[in-house]
Image 1: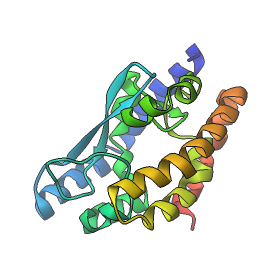
Image 2: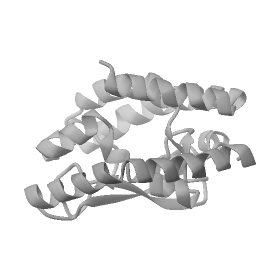
Image 3: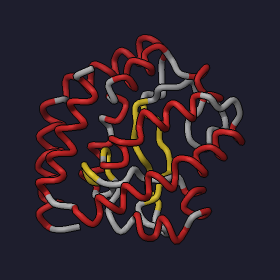
Length: 202
């Protein structure tokens, strides 16, 4: 990661944390009032093929003892009403500003993968994770609707895993590698602006 990109991440994340502090606090209060804790959901993701970290999110599902793999149709019944609204505007990802400050993530880059997929496709992710994982990115923007659609049709954990591995992982990796070859601060700003537009302008 270049010094300029890291500086941008730190300055922009600090500004957003200050600017969005009332929103973050409001979400915490509403969650506690409506359903109690926990407010946050922590998921292990990979920064490199060997190094993991805990990804922060607002909790959007009911708590179960074991929760592994990507979210597909088999998990839809667990999404809370508030969780659905948070997901609609990607507000569940606001806590990832902490991950950015810590250096686990950048604003723009490949979405951080689960360990199970890195272990399954080590060569692919060794190339993809030369870029620091991001909150948004080229693959996120162009694959989000497709991924949501194909995974929503899955009715079991095994089916979700198979569809994600076969139909999503290779396509997302291809786009992540295109981003990697063309990465710049200007390109990052374009992708951030496109993300905001897609989230709030329907």
